[in-house]
Amino acid sequence: MKFSRLILANLFRKKVRLLLTIGSFAVALFLFVFLGVVDDAFSRGADVAGADRLVVINRTSIINPIPLSYRDQILRIPGVKCITHNNWFGGVYQDEKNFFPQFVIDPENQRQVFPELVVPDDEWNNFLKDRDGAVVGAATMKRFGWKIGDRIPIKTTLYGLAETAWEFNIDGVYHGKDPKDDETQFWFQWDAFEERVPERVKGLIGWYVLRVDNPDDSVRIAKAIDTIFMNSPYETRTETESAFAAGWVKQFGNIKFLIVTIGTVVFFTLLLVTGNTMAISVRERTPEIAILKAIGFSDRAVLGFIVGESLVIAMLGCVGLFLAFLAIPILSRATAGMLPTLIIAPKVLISGVVAAVAVGFASAILPGLGAMRMRVVDALRRV
Amino acid sequence: MVRVDGSGTGGGLIQVRGLDKTYRRGSEDIHVLQGLNLDVSKGDFVAFMGPSGSGKTTLLNLLGGLDVPTRGSVTVAGDEITHMSRGKLTDWRARHVGFIFQMYNLIPVLTAFQNVELPLLLTKLSKTERRKHVETALAIVGLADRMHHFPRQLSGGQEQRVAIARAIVADPTFLLCDEPTGDLDRKSADEVMELIKQLVKEHGKTVLMVTHDPIVAKQANLTLHLEKGVLVEAGARDHQPWEGTAS
Image (cartoon, rainbow over all chains, first blue to last red; front, side, top):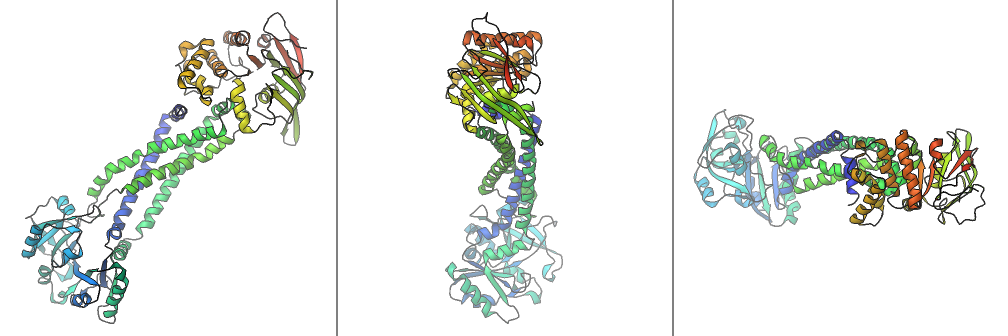
C-alpha cells in the first residue's frame, strides 16, 4: 500500500494521455461486451434448448413442409412423450422493420412441449375458444405497447396468400421462466391458418417439435423417425433442438467466427496502443527509474510499479463495462426485431475484466522488463 | 584519515584496492581506472577532481555499488561489495549509500516530503516513524516549510537541498555527491556546500564528492586528483577539526 502513492502519482502525470488510454480500454471493453452479448443472443437458442426435445424438419430444407399425417406415426415410436407442430407465418406488422417471429401452433400440445413458456390458464382458455386469437410474447407486447384485447393486423405473402391483412385478437401473453427464453414470438392457431390457406398447402406443417421420455434415447428416436419416412416424398431430418438452433444461427453466417475475429483485432490493437503508451511513459522516466534503483528499489519493485500502473489503467478502463451495462438494454430495444434480445450475462462482464487485466499485464511486461534490466549507470548518463 | 597509497590497515570505513575499470569502445580498450587505491575513514570529506573523462564519476559509481570494477575490490564497513549480486547490491545501497546528483533527480510528481520519504519506503518503519524522519531531514536542510511543495515550485538550490534530505533521511553510512553544485549559481552552491559541511561537522557524515569547481573542492578536507587512472593527493587543510588528514 505504501507504494500505491508512487504508482498513482506516476499514473496521473500526463492526464490527457491517461484519459486517452483509459478511453481506448473503455471503448474496447464496451465493444467486447457488445460482441459477447450478440454472440450470446445468437447462441442462446442452443443454450436454452430442452435436452429432451427433438425437432423434425424436411430433409431438403426447413422451408420445405412435411405432412401433418406424420404426427401419429411419430407418436407411436416408443419413448416419444408428446409432439406439436409449427409453421412459419412470415407476416409483416405495419412495416417490415417491425419484425417479430409468428408461428402457427398446435394449441392442444404447445404447452406440453414448451412448458417453459408460460401462459395463464384463463388467457389460454380464451385463446382456445377464439379462432382468431393470438398469444404473444411479453417482449413483443412491450415493444409495440399492445395489450390483451387488441386487434392486430398482419400481412403475409407466403403460402400463395394475397397480401391482405389477417387480423388477430390478443387473448394472452406468455412469459419465459428463464430470462434467456425468447419472449418475442406471436402464436396463432393451426385451424385458423389451415382454413385460409390454398388447398395445396393444407395438411402441411413446417416442422415438428417433440419431447422424449429419456434424453438418452434421443439418438435412437431421431434415427427411427428418419427411417420411417425414408424414401417418401417428404423425407425428414430429425435432430436435437440445440443442434437445430445452432444450424439456424449458421444461416446468418459464422457469427461466432466473426465475433471472435473482431474481438481479437480490437484487443490486439488495444495491446499495441497501451503497450506503446507504457513504453513511452517508461522511456520518459528513465532517469527517475535509475534514481529509484540507485536509492535501493529492486528490479522487481520497478517492474511491479510499471505493471501496477498498467493494471490500474486497465481497471479504470473497465468503465467501458459499466457503460455497456447501461447501454445494452437501450441497444436491445433499438435492435428489437433485427437481433434477438440482448442480455448481459455475468460471464461476459467477468470475461471483460479478465481480458482487461490480461491486456494491462501484457502491455506492461515488455517496457517493465526493459526498466527492470536497465543499468543505473547507463540510465544516469542520459540525464 | 585518507590514504591513496594502499597502505591503510583496513580499519577505515572505505577501502579500495587495485581498482581497475576498463571500457571497451569498438575495438579499443579504455582503461579509466588503473590499480587505484583509497582508504577513507568515517567522517572524512573528500573531493575528487580531474579533467572530463578522467574517471571521477566512474569511481563514484564503483564506490556506490552502481557499477562493478574490471578488477580490484571495494570494501565498505567490512562488506566487500565487488562480488555482490545485483540484488544484494541494491539492498546494500539502500542501507549504506546516500546519493546526491548534479541534476537533483527528484521525482517531479511527488512533493518534497514524498521525495524524501522514498528511501524509507524500503524500510520497516511505520508511517508515523517515516513522517518523523522526513520532517527531521527536511529541517536539517532548512526546508521544513516547503515539504508539501513539488519540485517545480522550488528553486534549483532548494531542489538540491531536498535531494540532500533524501540522501540522508535513511542515515546512510556515507554520501556520494556527483557535482552537487554543478547546476547551481554561486549563492545556491555556497548554501549547498555549507549544508554538506554541516552534515560532516555536526552529523559525522562521510562524504565523497566529485566536482569540477576548485572553490567547491576547497571546502572538502582533502582534494584528490584523478590522473591516468590513479588518485593523486592535491592538498590537505588541517585547520578544521572535523577534517581528515592525507598521508
